[in-house]
Image: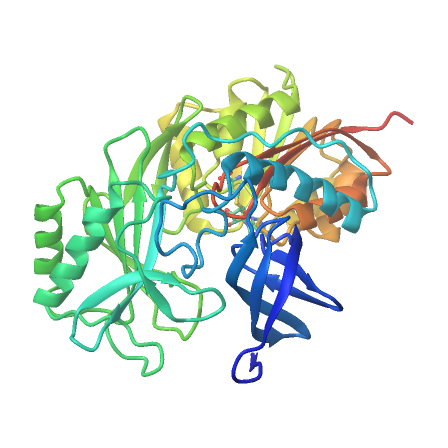
Length: 455
Ligand code: SAH
């Protein structure tokens, strides 16, 4: 990251558009500069902050023309914290941006001109997140703080109140900070690779009064661990389980492999679309429970499930999509790579007395290739891969298996467009529905319904 000239260079410019990462595209004569917190139609004085990979990044100095979509943010630190790009952007405009972004990614990446339904948003787009993870630091006076990393850095912006998190997290964070000080538990120092607590992860249940706290530590054991947990649960009786996760690696990945349950069952329960789920620390679980139920409703409707259907749920996490579908179909096969999530899925099937469900711990592509080799019959494929999308092995096997319907749930419209383009000779798009799982951010979730073309 090269610093640009000192003192920083100012210029006058106008914001023409927003990038897929929600940055304002500000044009100053010949140059394009990407700026956070500025919206289309706004103009004023900007300065260059830094240059990376040949692109210029800047910040707002003064705005002369302000967008009618600009609103006062609830959060005072939204410009410095990397979490919310859009707190100053009216919610309706956020939703319109997301619809346009999905359409644009299909145009740019898939070279397809597609119809995209309007993005479905939340009635109350705040305090929706059920998963909170924060690193810790210590100031010169020895006070402990926690927060989020400033964009593209490892500098922690201290946060005391976050407007997108479950409200119950704030008290727990406060208590942990206080107890760390009194028990002399040091925050992890990335440079020195010393200290104890790397991250705190809080997971809240939407329907059950259950909360999980995960202490991600740099060490196996630390003095007064039991007393610390005892005090924490005493002061926050809403916590129903505490897990220690040990991560001694020099990495940006938050969770390590090993874990130890320090209090309670090591899991929390929640329910989605009438099915109960156990969630353990390492399993993926959607972070916006209100919108997740709507997302799965949309996915089920898109699949047009029938009683005789064989359903395949790939990248299944703790089994959510497959288990919700199971009651409406003959049989469900799921595949997921994380062992802890597969164990959760097995338990979830049992607890809900769902017997027509089988889950396998494997790489989705390898599993899919074997299914295609064995010429298995599948009517409906749900696929919900991580951000990087699926791969050619998976998609080639899909083209051999030929399920009559495919429902692709995606958290990244660019890899979604790439993968849909790959199968578009055999599959026709029926609908593209973006859903706002992540209000105040540039992220968007999309459900695409596809059907096999009749030859
Ligand atoms: N469908 C689930 C999970 C979606 S997140 C839900 O809605 O909750 C994507 C999931 O894909 C994660 O659980 C991740 O562990 C899993 N995954 C990532 N790479 C994979 C691979 N190569 N094969 C199978 N699963 C994979």
